[in-house]
Length: 252
Image (spheres, rainbow, N blue to C red):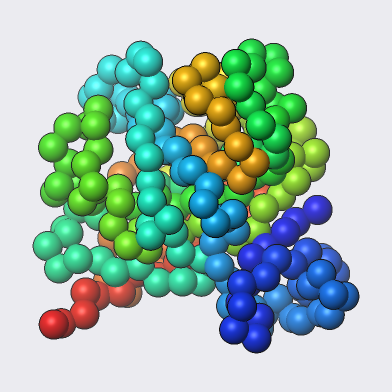
């Protein structure tokens, strides 16, 4: 099953994708064409959002860094999220802004002190993130600062959540990023340094992961700097395609 969060009659509501993803069915049974939807990021308000840096071996090698142990984990704010077909502002001074396609694991039931063997039982679903980075502001690869990873609407998320039961192996998914139709990233979740189960187990040793919490699991190799006007599509096998467009920074 696929679930999306949309705006309907001025309110945020959840809907189920039916009719081969062409239709959205609301909780009251009403249906609307998916093509007419105003998509929101499929996130539970108040959820924690964790993100990983340097978690793909090919990307670590590309950047000339070493794998970080323990894993490089940072938090993101709700302000960073924007839904499918949304827009992201490219700051005028961000000449090195690039997209990062990421598999997102969403916690389905509380996890505390779980083992890696138990971890995937606590996943409720998966979605896609395009976690833009702005390298001009990157002071330390091992500790991304606010200007790099917490700007408004710089993390498109969606378009929907796919139930965990429909993803047989989260470590066997192809990821791609296309900018204006050209492939700039093409990788596989098999290349993760610490896999989804390992990430959940690691985080659960420190804190309780709650339903709705999200883990952005890192990105494969492929650094491509984007310009205002670019259309960016991130796609992950078995989940879908997340589309976003960069726009110029509004003048004051």
